[in-house]
Length: 420
Image 1 (cartoon, rainbow, N blue to C red):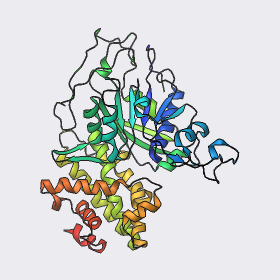
Image 2: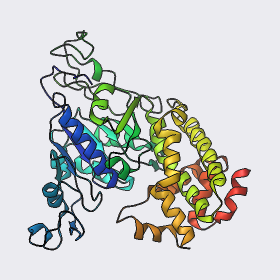
Image 3: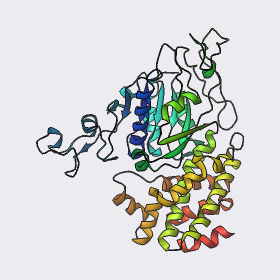
Image 4: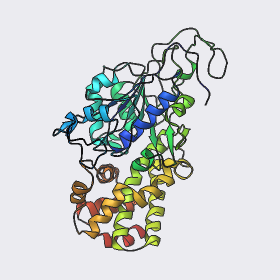
Protein backbone atom coordinates (compact mmCIF):
# COMPACT_ATOMS: atom_id res chain seq x y z
CA UNK A 1 0.00 0.00 0.00
CA UNK A 2 1.12 3.51 -0.67
CA UNK A 3 2.54 5.59 2.13
CA UNK A 4 0.54 8.52 3.44
CA UNK A 5 3.65 10.69 3.89
CA UNK A 6 4.78 13.41 4.05
CA UNK A 7 3.64 14.48 7.52
CA UNK A 8 5.73 15.78 10.38
CA UNK A 9 4.40 13.39 13.02
CA UNK A 10 3.58 9.70 13.21
CA UNK A 11 0.69 7.98 14.94
CA UNK A 12 1.42 6.22 18.21
CA UNK A 13 -0.79 3.16 18.70
CA UNK A 14 -1.89 1.47 21.94
CA UNK A 15 -3.90 -1.73 22.31
CA UNK A 16 -6.00 -1.69 25.48
CA UNK A 17 -6.39 -5.33 26.44
CA UNK A 18 -4.32 -8.50 26.24
CA UNK A 19 -6.56 -11.54 26.36
CA UNK A 20 -6.72 -14.11 23.59
CA UNK A 21 -8.21 -11.80 20.93
CA UNK A 22 -6.56 -8.68 22.36
CA UNK A 23 -3.09 -10.21 22.00
CA UNK A 24 -3.87 -11.47 18.48
CA UNK A 25 -4.95 -7.97 17.41
CA UNK A 26 -1.90 -6.45 19.12
CA UNK A 27 0.33 -8.81 17.10
CA UNK A 28 -1.29 -7.61 13.86
CA UNK A 29 -1.09 -3.94 14.80
CA UNK A 30 2.57 -4.21 15.81
CA UNK A 31 3.45 -5.95 12.54
CA UNK A 32 1.64 -3.28 10.55
CA UNK A 33 3.24 -0.43 12.51
CA UNK A 34 6.69 -1.85 11.80
CA UNK A 35 5.85 -2.27 8.10
CA UNK A 36 4.50 1.28 7.76
CA UNK A 37 6.93 3.26 9.87
CA UNK A 38 6.43 6.42 7.84
CA UNK A 39 2.86 6.59 9.22
CA UNK A 40 3.13 4.90 12.63
CA UNK A 41 5.65 4.90 15.43
CA UNK A 42 7.28 1.50 15.37
CA UNK A 43 6.77 0.66 19.05
CA UNK A 44 3.23 -0.39 20.00
CA UNK A 45 2.01 -0.45 23.59
CA UNK A 46 -0.30 -3.21 24.89
CA UNK A 47 -1.96 -2.69 28.24
CA UNK A 48 -1.91 -5.90 30.29
CA UNK A 49 -3.94 -6.39 33.45
CA UNK A 50 -1.07 -7.55 35.61
CA UNK A 51 -1.21 -11.00 37.13
CA UNK A 52 1.19 -13.65 38.33
CA UNK A 53 1.77 -16.48 35.86
CA UNK A 54 4.08 -19.49 35.73
CA UNK A 55 5.68 -20.50 32.47
CA UNK A 56 4.40 -24.03 31.80
CA UNK A 57 6.99 -26.78 31.77
CA UNK A 58 5.95 -27.74 28.26
CA UNK A 59 6.62 -24.21 26.99
CA UNK A 60 9.55 -23.60 24.66
CA UNK A 61 10.57 -20.84 27.08
CA UNK A 62 10.80 -23.11 30.10
CA UNK A 63 14.30 -23.29 31.54
CA UNK A 64 14.67 -24.39 35.17
CA UNK A 65 17.69 -22.11 35.61
CA UNK A 66 15.96 -19.00 34.22
CA UNK A 67 14.75 -16.38 36.72
CA UNK A 68 11.48 -16.28 34.73
CA UNK A 69 10.86 -19.92 35.69
CA UNK A 70 11.35 -19.54 39.43
CA UNK A 71 7.69 -19.61 40.40
CA UNK A 72 4.95 -17.15 39.39
CA UNK A 73 6.17 -14.03 37.58
CA UNK A 74 4.54 -10.85 36.32
CA UNK A 75 2.78 -11.57 33.03
CA UNK A 76 4.18 -8.34 31.56
CA UNK A 77 7.73 -9.43 32.33
CA UNK A 78 7.13 -12.79 30.68
CA UNK A 79 5.63 -11.18 27.57
CA UNK A 80 8.39 -8.61 27.21
CA UNK A 81 11.21 -11.09 27.70
CA UNK A 82 9.84 -14.09 25.79
CA UNK A 83 7.70 -12.19 23.25
CA UNK A 84 4.83 -14.54 23.96
CA UNK A 85 1.64 -14.30 26.01
CA UNK A 86 2.05 -17.73 27.58
CA UNK A 87 -1.31 -17.59 29.36
CA UNK A 88 -3.75 -16.25 26.78
CA UNK A 89 -2.05 -16.92 23.42
CA UNK A 90 0.50 -19.63 24.04
CA UNK A 91 2.75 -20.83 21.25
CA UNK A 92 2.47 -17.63 19.19
CA UNK A 93 5.54 -15.45 18.74
CA UNK A 94 4.83 -11.74 19.20
CA UNK A 95 6.71 -8.94 17.42
CA UNK A 96 9.62 -7.45 19.33
CA UNK A 97 8.16 -3.95 18.88
CA UNK A 98 5.09 -4.89 20.96
CA UNK A 99 5.56 -3.87 24.58
CA UNK A 100 3.39 -5.11 27.46
CA UNK A 101 2.62 -2.34 29.95
CA UNK A 102 0.93 -2.94 33.34
CA UNK A 103 -0.19 0.70 33.60
CA UNK A 104 -3.12 1.61 31.38
CA UNK A 105 -2.52 5.31 31.95
CA UNK A 106 1.11 5.04 30.87
CA UNK A 107 0.23 2.77 27.94
CA UNK A 108 -2.21 5.27 26.39
CA UNK A 109 -0.08 8.35 27.01
CA UNK A 110 0.48 10.39 23.82
CA UNK A 111 -1.25 7.76 21.65
CA UNK A 112 -3.31 9.02 18.73
CA UNK A 113 -4.93 5.65 17.96
CA UNK A 114 -6.39 3.50 20.74
CA UNK A 115 -7.54 -0.05 20.00
CA UNK A 116 -9.90 -1.38 22.68
CA UNK A 117 -10.09 -5.16 23.11
CA UNK A 118 -11.53 -6.07 26.51
CA UNK A 119 -14.44 -8.11 27.80
CA UNK A 120 -17.27 -5.62 27.63
CA UNK A 121 -18.02 -5.75 31.36
CA UNK A 122 -14.66 -4.03 32.01
CA UNK A 123 -14.67 -1.33 29.36
CA UNK A 124 -16.49 1.44 31.26
CA UNK A 125 -14.25 1.13 34.30
CA UNK A 126 -11.14 1.12 32.12
CA UNK A 127 -12.26 4.20 30.18
CA UNK A 128 -12.93 6.04 33.44
CA UNK A 129 -9.32 5.32 34.46
CA UNK A 130 -7.89 7.02 31.36
CA UNK A 131 -10.47 9.77 31.00
CA UNK A 132 -8.68 13.12 30.73
CA UNK A 133 -5.32 11.36 30.40
CA UNK A 134 -5.32 10.77 26.65
CA UNK A 135 -4.74 13.12 23.74
CA UNK A 136 -7.99 15.05 23.17
CA UNK A 137 -7.80 14.39 19.44
CA UNK A 138 -7.10 10.64 19.76
CA UNK A 139 -9.29 8.24 17.81
CA UNK A 140 -10.37 4.73 18.75
CA UNK A 141 -11.32 1.35 17.34
CA UNK A 142 -13.46 -0.97 19.48
CA UNK A 143 -13.02 -4.73 19.07
CA UNK A 144 -15.55 -5.35 21.85
CA UNK A 145 -18.36 -7.83 21.24
CA UNK A 146 -21.41 -6.56 23.09
CA UNK A 147 -23.93 -3.77 23.51
CA UNK A 148 -24.18 -1.24 26.32
CA UNK A 149 -27.63 -1.52 27.88
CA UNK A 150 -28.73 0.98 30.50
CA UNK A 151 -32.02 2.28 31.87
CA UNK A 152 -31.81 5.10 29.31
CA UNK A 153 -31.59 2.68 26.38
CA UNK A 154 -29.10 0.75 24.29
CA UNK A 155 -25.90 1.96 22.64
CA UNK A 156 -22.80 0.56 20.99
CA UNK A 157 -19.59 0.21 22.96
CA UNK A 158 -17.80 2.24 20.31
CA UNK A 159 -20.02 5.18 21.27
CA UNK A 160 -19.80 4.45 24.99
CA UNK A 161 -16.01 4.65 24.68
CA UNK A 162 -16.24 7.81 22.60
CA UNK A 163 -18.65 9.54 24.96
CA UNK A 164 -16.62 8.77 28.10
CA UNK A 165 -13.31 9.80 26.56
CA UNK A 166 -14.56 12.63 24.33
CA UNK A 167 -13.19 11.04 21.15
CA UNK A 168 -14.51 9.35 18.02
CA UNK A 169 -14.39 5.53 18.02
CA UNK A 170 -15.11 3.04 15.24
CA UNK A 171 -15.45 -0.75 15.44
CA UNK A 172 -13.74 -3.93 14.23
CA UNK A 173 -15.51 -7.27 13.99
CA UNK A 174 -15.50 -10.28 11.70
CA UNK A 175 -15.28 -14.02 11.27
CA UNK A 176 -12.20 -14.27 13.44
CA UNK A 177 -11.29 -17.15 15.73
CA UNK A 178 -8.41 -15.58 17.63
CA UNK A 179 -6.09 -18.59 17.63
CA UNK A 180 -6.46 -19.05 13.88
CA UNK A 181 -5.74 -15.38 13.21
CA UNK A 182 -2.75 -15.38 15.53
CA UNK A 183 -1.33 -18.42 13.74
CA UNK A 184 -1.67 -16.53 10.47
CA UNK A 185 -4.36 -18.69 8.92
CA UNK A 186 -5.99 -16.54 6.28
CA UNK A 187 -9.16 -14.71 7.33
CA UNK A 188 -10.92 -11.40 6.80
CA UNK A 189 -12.53 -8.82 9.03
CA UNK A 190 -14.54 -5.60 8.91
CA UNK A 191 -13.68 -2.18 10.26
CA UNK A 192 -16.48 0.34 10.55
CA UNK A 193 -15.35 3.93 10.71
CA UNK A 194 -17.36 6.96 9.70
CA UNK A 195 -14.59 9.56 9.69
CA UNK A 196 -15.40 12.80 11.48
CA UNK A 197 -15.74 15.22 8.61
CA UNK A 198 -12.86 17.48 9.59
CA UNK A 199 -10.34 14.72 10.27
CA UNK A 200 -9.82 14.04 6.59
CA UNK A 201 -9.81 17.75 5.76
CA UNK A 202 -7.42 19.01 8.38
CA UNK A 203 -4.92 21.49 6.95
CA UNK A 204 -1.72 19.88 5.84
CA UNK A 205 1.89 20.95 5.72
CA UNK A 206 2.09 18.97 2.48
CA UNK A 207 -0.25 17.44 -0.05
CA UNK A 208 -3.15 15.27 1.07
CA UNK A 209 -2.93 11.51 0.42
CA UNK A 210 -4.66 12.09 -2.91
CA UNK A 211 -2.26 14.86 -3.82
CA UNK A 212 -4.83 17.63 -3.47
CA UNK A 213 -3.74 20.61 -1.36
CA UNK A 214 -6.00 21.42 1.56
CA UNK A 215 -8.23 24.46 1.11
CA UNK A 216 -8.08 25.31 4.81
CA UNK A 217 -5.19 26.81 6.68
CA UNK A 218 -6.56 26.88 10.23
CA UNK A 219 -7.07 23.99 12.63
CA UNK A 220 -10.50 23.99 14.26
CA UNK A 221 -10.37 23.25 17.99
CA UNK A 222 -13.59 21.25 18.18
CA UNK A 223 -16.55 20.29 16.05
CA UNK A 224 -19.81 18.35 16.12
CA UNK A 225 -20.53 14.98 14.53
CA UNK A 226 -23.49 12.65 14.20
CA UNK A 227 -23.75 9.46 16.25
CA UNK A 228 -25.23 6.13 15.12
CA UNK A 229 -28.74 7.36 15.99
CA UNK A 230 -28.31 9.94 13.24
CA UNK A 231 -28.50 12.76 15.77
CA UNK A 232 -25.82 15.27 16.66
CA UNK A 233 -23.60 13.74 19.32
CA UNK A 234 -23.27 15.39 22.71
CA UNK A 235 -19.53 14.79 22.43
CA UNK A 236 -17.69 17.55 20.62
CA UNK A 237 -14.54 16.35 18.94
CA UNK A 238 -11.19 18.03 18.66
CA UNK A 239 -9.83 17.94 15.14
CA UNK A 240 -6.74 15.88 14.48
CA UNK A 241 -3.77 18.24 14.07
CA UNK A 242 -2.63 18.69 10.50
CA UNK A 243 0.89 17.41 11.08
CA UNK A 244 -0.46 13.86 11.48
CA UNK A 245 -1.65 11.70 8.59
CA UNK A 246 -5.46 11.77 8.61
CA UNK A 247 -7.10 8.87 10.42
CA UNK A 248 -9.29 7.67 7.60
CA UNK A 249 -10.10 4.40 5.85
CA UNK A 250 -6.67 4.25 4.17
CA UNK A 251 -4.81 4.72 7.44
CA UNK A 252 -6.90 2.09 9.23
CA UNK A 253 -6.28 -0.41 6.48
CA UNK A 254 -2.55 0.26 6.81
CA UNK A 255 -2.83 -0.44 10.54
CA UNK A 256 -4.79 -3.70 10.40
CA UNK A 257 -4.40 -5.33 6.97
CA UNK A 258 -1.98 -8.23 6.71
CA UNK A 259 -1.48 -10.88 4.01
CA UNK A 260 -3.26 -13.33 6.35
CA UNK A 261 -5.80 -10.85 7.77
CA UNK A 262 -7.71 -9.01 5.07
CA UNK A 263 -9.59 -5.87 6.02
CA UNK A 264 -12.59 -4.17 4.44
CA UNK A 265 -13.34 -0.71 5.81
CA UNK A 266 -16.95 0.48 5.73
CA UNK A 267 -18.99 3.32 7.24
CA UNK A 268 -21.65 1.25 9.04
CA UNK A 269 -20.56 1.29 12.69
CA UNK A 270 -23.97 0.11 13.93
CA UNK A 271 -24.10 -2.90 11.60
CA UNK A 272 -20.57 -4.09 12.31
CA UNK A 273 -21.01 -3.64 16.08
CA UNK A 274 -24.38 -5.36 16.28
CA UNK A 275 -23.16 -8.25 14.14
CA UNK A 276 -20.29 -8.80 16.54
CA UNK A 277 -22.54 -8.69 19.59
CA UNK A 278 -25.67 -10.58 18.59
CA UNK A 279 -23.98 -13.46 16.77
CA UNK A 280 -22.63 -14.62 20.14
CA UNK A 281 -26.20 -15.08 21.40
CA UNK A 282 -27.11 -17.05 18.27
CA UNK A 283 -23.97 -19.18 18.75
CA UNK A 284 -25.21 -20.30 22.18
CA UNK A 285 -28.38 -21.66 20.61
CA UNK A 286 -26.33 -23.36 17.88
CA UNK A 287 -24.16 -24.98 20.55
CA UNK A 288 -27.19 -26.34 22.39
CA UNK A 289 -28.56 -27.75 19.13
CA UNK A 290 -25.22 -29.43 18.45
CA UNK A 291 -25.10 -30.82 21.97
CA UNK A 292 -28.59 -32.26 21.57
CA UNK A 293 -27.42 -34.11 18.45
CA UNK A 294 -30.09 -32.52 16.24
CA UNK A 295 -27.74 -32.18 13.27
CA UNK A 296 -26.69 -29.56 10.75
CA UNK A 297 -30.19 -28.89 9.44
CA UNK A 298 -31.29 -27.75 12.86
CA UNK A 299 -28.21 -25.60 13.29
CA UNK A 300 -28.83 -23.99 9.90
CA UNK A 301 -32.38 -23.14 11.02
CA UNK A 302 -31.04 -21.46 14.14
CA UNK A 303 -28.61 -19.42 12.05
CA UNK A 304 -31.32 -18.37 9.58
CA UNK A 305 -33.62 -17.14 12.33
CA UNK A 306 -30.68 -15.54 14.13
CA UNK A 307 -29.65 -13.57 11.05
CA UNK A 308 -33.21 -12.33 10.53
CA UNK A 309 -33.40 -11.18 14.14
CA UNK A 310 -30.05 -9.40 13.87
CA UNK A 311 -31.31 -7.49 10.82
CA UNK A 312 -34.62 -6.70 12.52
CA UNK A 313 -32.86 -5.50 15.69
CA UNK A 314 -30.71 -3.15 13.65
CA UNK A 315 -33.66 -1.77 11.71
CA UNK A 316 -35.78 -1.21 14.83
CA UNK A 317 -33.23 0.39 17.09
CA UNK A 318 -30.49 1.83 14.83
CA UNK A 319 -32.50 2.41 11.68
CA UNK A 320 -31.29 5.94 11.04
CA UNK A 321 -27.76 4.89 10.17
CA UNK A 322 -27.60 1.11 9.77
CA UNK A 323 -27.06 -0.54 6.41
CA UNK A 324 -28.73 -3.93 6.69
CA UNK A 325 -26.63 -5.23 3.79
CA UNK A 326 -23.72 -5.23 6.26
CA UNK A 327 -25.22 -8.38 7.81
CA UNK A 328 -25.14 -10.26 4.51
CA UNK A 329 -22.18 -8.73 2.68
CA UNK A 330 -19.51 -8.11 5.31
CA UNK A 331 -17.38 -10.43 7.41
CA UNK A 332 -18.91 -8.88 10.52
CA UNK A 333 -22.33 -10.23 9.54
CA UNK A 334 -23.26 -13.67 8.28
CA UNK A 335 -19.63 -14.83 7.94
CA UNK A 336 -18.95 -14.11 11.61
CA UNK A 337 -22.14 -15.92 12.60
CA UNK A 338 -21.17 -19.00 10.57
CA UNK A 339 -17.76 -19.14 12.23
CA UNK A 340 -19.16 -18.49 15.71
CA UNK A 341 -21.80 -21.21 15.27
CA UNK A 342 -19.18 -23.72 14.12
CA UNK A 343 -16.16 -23.19 16.35
CA UNK A 344 -16.50 -20.13 18.62
CA UNK A 345 -16.17 -20.30 22.38
CA UNK A 346 -19.87 -19.52 22.96
CA UNK A 347 -20.86 -22.40 20.67
CA UNK A 348 -18.33 -24.75 22.23
CA UNK A 349 -19.29 -24.03 25.84
CA UNK A 350 -23.02 -24.30 25.09
CA UNK A 351 -22.43 -27.65 23.37
CA UNK A 352 -20.40 -28.95 26.31
CA UNK A 353 -23.05 -27.80 28.79
CA UNK A 354 -25.53 -30.17 27.13
CA UNK A 355 -23.08 -33.04 26.77
CA UNK A 356 -21.87 -32.74 30.35
CA UNK A 357 -25.29 -31.84 31.79
CA UNK A 358 -23.69 -28.83 33.47
CA UNK A 359 -24.69 -25.16 33.67
CA UNK A 360 -22.88 -23.14 31.03
CA UNK A 361 -21.28 -21.05 33.80
CA UNK A 362 -19.56 -24.20 35.10
CA UNK A 363 -18.22 -25.05 31.64
CA UNK A 364 -17.00 -21.47 31.30
CA UNK A 365 -14.97 -21.84 34.50
CA UNK A 366 -13.23 -25.01 33.35
CA UNK A 367 -12.72 -24.26 29.65
CA UNK A 368 -11.82 -20.59 29.23
CA UNK A 369 -8.64 -20.15 31.25
CA UNK A 370 -10.06 -17.28 33.31
CA UNK A 371 -11.76 -15.50 30.41
CA UNK A 372 -15.50 -14.89 30.07
CA UNK A 373 -18.19 -15.74 27.56
CA UNK A 374 -19.65 -12.67 25.92
CA UNK A 375 -22.77 -14.39 24.59
CA UNK A 376 -24.31 -15.07 27.99
CA UNK A 377 -23.83 -11.49 29.16
CA UNK A 378 -25.10 -10.07 25.89
CA UNK A 379 -28.19 -12.32 25.99
CA UNK A 380 -29.08 -11.03 29.46
CA UNK A 381 -28.46 -7.39 28.57
CA UNK A 382 -30.33 -7.54 25.27
CA UNK A 383 -33.31 -9.22 26.92
CA UNK A 384 -33.38 -6.53 29.60
CA UNK A 385 -33.62 -3.93 26.84
CA UNK A 386 -36.23 -5.84 24.82
CA UNK A 387 -38.37 -6.37 27.91
CA UNK A 388 -38.44 -2.63 28.61
CA UNK A 389 -39.37 -2.04 24.97
CA UNK A 390 -42.14 -4.64 25.12
CA UNK A 391 -40.44 -6.40 22.20
CA UNK A 392 -39.51 -9.85 23.54
CA UNK A 393 -42.10 -11.60 21.38
CA UNK A 394 -40.68 -9.96 18.23
CA UNK A 395 -37.31 -11.64 18.82
CA UNK A 396 -38.17 -15.24 19.74
CA UNK A 397 -34.65 -16.66 19.34
CA UNK A 398 -32.93 -13.96 21.39
CA UNK A 399 -35.67 -14.37 24.01
CA UNK A 400 -35.44 -18.16 24.01
CA UNK A 401 -31.68 -18.07 24.60
CA UNK A 402 -32.17 -15.79 27.58
CA UNK A 403 -34.89 -18.01 29.03
CA UNK A 404 -32.81 -21.17 28.66
CA UNK A 405 -29.95 -19.44 30.45
CA UNK A 406 -32.32 -18.40 33.23
CA UNK A 407 -33.80 -21.91 33.52
CA UNK A 408 -37.35 -20.95 32.57
CA UNK A 409 -37.23 -22.75 29.20
CA UNK A 410 -35.76 -26.07 28.11
CA UNK A 411 -33.56 -26.38 25.05
CA UNK A 412 -36.12 -28.88 23.71
CA UNK A 413 -38.68 -26.04 23.55
CA UNK A 414 -36.62 -23.77 21.26
CA UNK A 415 -37.88 -25.14 17.89
CA UNK A 416 -41.56 -24.68 18.69
CA UNK A 417 -40.95 -21.29 20.31
CA UNK A 418 -39.08 -19.72 17.38
CA UNK A 419 -41.61 -21.17 14.91
CA UNK A 420 -44.39 -18.87 16.18
